[in-house]
Length: 113
Image (cartoon, rainbow, N blue to C red; front, side):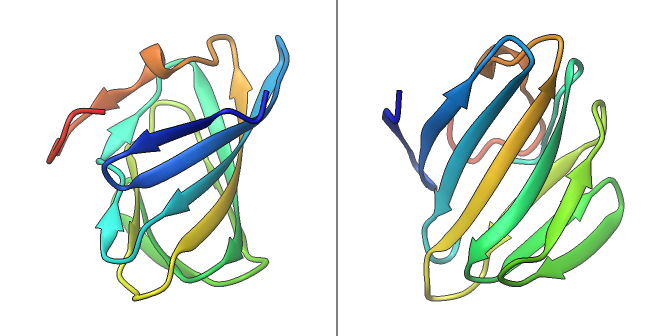
């Protein structure tokens, strides 16, 4: 486990994977963001470990700081943006029937994987 997977926006490390849940540490580089996306088979819960997260869930936009969290229901469009000059570190817990990268529908793809 603990394999680091690089992405154009930063990287994530898979910490735990079971048949019921998956936990990742996500690091979003300064001035980067993940694509606007949704998942049909899982929900996500994000906890900010460090940095400041600009988050969009549906049409709602919020800012989270260290130790704050948010729930993302399945089938809801969402995005995480790091507008700061420091890395953003998030702990993500996924719950659902399908816990794989195949359950991502992207909407504003600036880059592919």
